[in-house]
Amino acid sequence: MKTLPRNILIFIIILPLILSLSACSTSKEREVVSQGDKWEKTNRKIFRFNKKLDTAIIKPISKGYKKITPDIVEKGISNFFSNLGDIKNAFNNVLQFKLVDAGSDMTRFAFNSTFGLAGFIDVASGLQMEKHHEDFGQTLAKWGVKSGPYYVMPFFGPSTVRDSYSFWVDAATSPLTYADHSTELAILKGIDTRTKLFGTEKILEEVTIDEYALVRDAWMQDREYKIKDGNIDVTEKEDLASELDALD
Image (cartoon, rainbow, N blue to C red):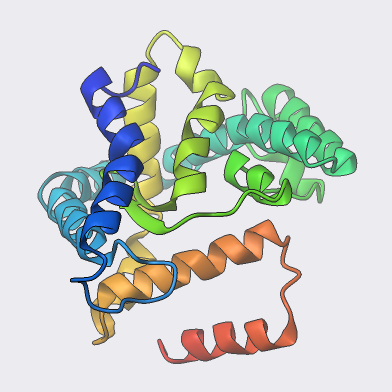
């Protein structure tokens, strides 16, 4: 993959192994932490590192990008990356044997890539073609692979052991990985993604509870919702609704 230096990639790949060894050696000394987050102490350090990195570099760049980029251009860039994501969605829907959804994904991609001028215009949504959001982590979950502990990836944020390794498979299915200017495109995609978080960030700034725990719980709820294609039971829906109400 071209988007990150080799040493960083190796570090991220072996981090779950380092954490698991650490967990085995210090489990008797550690405090009881939330279920599924047995690496919480290390996770919080990485969370703080990511937040400082975002505050110092990523957020200012994203704000500048949003300020100087016309709304129509910004929307077109978002549509372009979203359109390429339909390839990943189709790939994973095939692996999950959701062939109708996979066909819909490829139809969306074909329409937007042609009539939508390489995806800069989202023609498919205007034609009521449903947008799916699938990744290899969801595919592994469908195959029965356990998530493993929650942990925060340096630079990339919330994940689990299962989902972190799926990151590389998703990258392999993305045309951006093989583009001539893959690094520049990856940076632009990251900036585009960051600008979409400004609204959520305001909510986090208004709450007084533990930001780390809020992000973790919200992310894990969202992953469960996506893995089950929205088919969560009544109790889970009520719990999620209560958490969202608490933010009002």
